[in-house]
Image (cartoon, rainbow, N blue to C red; front, side, top):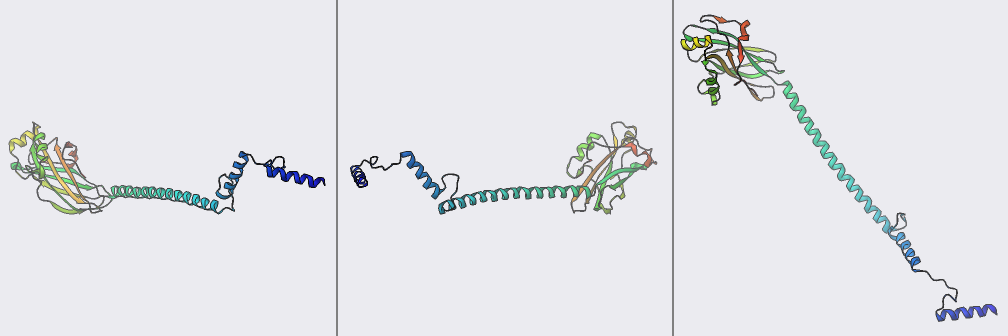
Length: 258
């Protein structure tokens, strides 16, 4: 009977809106927010704990993984590009270095000088290949003059050495480490007064100059210019022997090459 009376009072309290008197507990606003977050966590991965039962969470996880994979892929592409570029540049530099080491290098030196009667002068120039490969299609030409040094320098600056032509080119091949002897003669007889001034070293000197053209082992066109000044000259009719080669000095001009 008492139970029936209590049930009747509870139903009356619910009907009147007094939930507390009826023994019904109500959730606070903070509890409602926590409950909503829990629902979101279960469906959309709001917190760090991932619910494997949520399809939406799985889709977000897949999207994040794809994004991270794309970043890693681009990073790998960039690194690969710079790595390939480095290899290409290294190969090119190695190739250039190898060619510089293996190419032909032609140098010259005056080996003999003869002054004949009537201003006829001849010289022998030693053309040497100091490189590791032959100098192909080697040809040379030159001249002998007695001039003031400044005058000759100005003349050799002109294209094709117009005032002092090089003469006819002679072609041959010089092996690696080999040499060839080139004979040169003055294109024009040198007057006795000029020659006497050159022998005395009075404002004029005797010069032997010319150019050597050749191809290296990689089919590149090369040249070597040379110009030597005689510090001492033999009397007419005598030859300047090779052991007196130190009397020749290279001029500060027309001694370049490529």
